[in-house]
Length: 385
Ligand SMILES: *[C@@H]1O[C@H](CO)[C@@H](O)[C@H](O)[C@H]1NC(C)=O
Ligand SMILES: *[C@@H]1O[C@H](CO)[C@@H](O)[C@H](O)[C@H]1NC(C)=O
Ligand SMILES: *[C@@H]1O[C@H](CO)[C@@H](O)[C@H](O)[C@H]1NC(C)=O
Ligand SMILES: *[C@@H]1O[C@H](CO)[C@@H](O)[C@H](O)[C@H]1NC(C)=O
Ligand SMILES: *[C@@H]1O[C@H](CO)[C@@H](O)[C@H](O)[C@H]1NC(C)=O
Ligand SMILES: *[C@@H]1O[C@H](CO)[C@@H](O)[C@H](O)[C@H]1NC(C)=O
Ligand SMILES: *[C@@H]1O[C@H](CO)[C@@H](O)[C@H](O)[C@H]1NC(C)=O
Ligand SMILES: *[C@@H]1O[C@H](CO)[C@@H](O)[C@H](O)[C@H]1NC(C)=O
Image: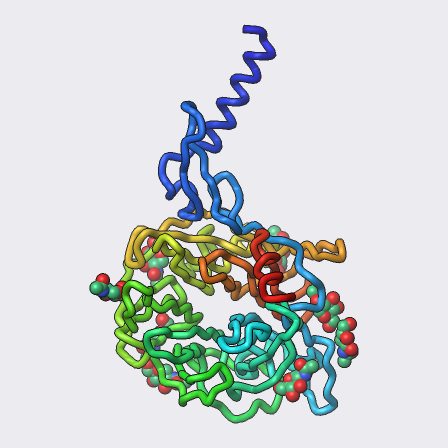
């Protein structure tokens, strides 16, 4: 063999070794491990996922001033200068009006910023008639302070929206001053409503924990009202329905909020994919560990499992970062990008990543909506946007 050919063969075998897979688990359960040639099988990633192991979100450029960015809003009665700062939320497609999207969002009251999240956070509802990316405009305060970590889902079996949050009703904050967790425990509570516009029932406490990540176990083949609920430390519970008792169902995992370790994560978000496998995104805090408290840019981790109760894999690698490309050509690395949630289409293809973001050097924060992959373009076109 010619020495150059030799090198080429060596290089090729190196490449195939790097990309080879033997099971779909090697493809992060975000794709199929398929044999193309006699030589090697490789990962064929589902739409929205990329990388040789399909472990990375295929993020597309975001459009400035979409999402929920009202940090420049001013009100003379506000205590703080951070406008209607917010910290992530969940997009809901209106069931009756295909051109209407809702965003239930954690907002900080009185112009306060992220620093005063406890107790100023409350849940607001915003609407977009410009498509799922927004911009979303405020329409309604859903709760008073203190409510945070809002997440909302339609429960098909219970035929109502379930709104999850931490917190408790407190007196309207008199300043932006933060109050300690010891004075306001982060109990996870749930409320329900027949419509996304309410009326919402009073919250009832489900478990002692924080960062709720619910997912109904309902499927067309099994119309169960059972609901899964993951919280901080990746503790996973299930209950017969939203008003039932929540029981821990999973084993302890090797990653959790044990501070300053490579597997230090918080804020889980869970879902079940089209094949029935389970996934989670979490806020990965690796740069805080490795860069002396710096919070960026590696902020996103992905975990997956064939079962809810056990077998979860965390590859300890970046699934997404805080560096965002914009359609105007700008690229911005945010100081913080947290509470990330995916909006899926009916086939469970990821379309948008919704995160709370804070620019470097800023105290204000907003909710960014960033498209994923390419399917979102057809989705918007089909709806007439
Ligand atoms: C968000 O709003 C601020 C003004 O408060 C602006 O400077 C910034 O460009 C906006 N960012 C995006 C991504 O919309
Ligand atoms: C905030 O910025 C947006 C986008 O540039 C602009 O339309 C809006 O008028 C600004 N609002 C205030 C209060 O400055
Ligand atoms: C800001 O939030 C308040 C409610 O807390 C609302 O009255 C106001 O319309 C919002 N303004 C914008 C621009 O989002
Ligand atoms: C949180 O739950 C505990 C019991 O688990 C209770 O003692 C406490 O009052 C609750 N806190 C709030 C703010 O609801
Ligand atoms: C709630 O959980 C926290 C953190 O795990 C713990 O410190 C606290 O004792 C718990 N409170 C109750 C009432 O169980
Ligand atoms: C339906 O799903 C629930 C929750 O996963 C499960 O407990 C139950 O056994 C399932 N029922 C059937 C008939 O498969
Ligand atoms: C966190 O992970 C460590 C290492 O696996 C384990 O010893 C510890 O019990 C876990 N903590 C929680 C709260 O799950
Ligand atoms: C790490 O950060 C702290 C405070 O933020 C600073 O005092 C210290 O000097 C830093 N250490 C290094 C090695 O940069």
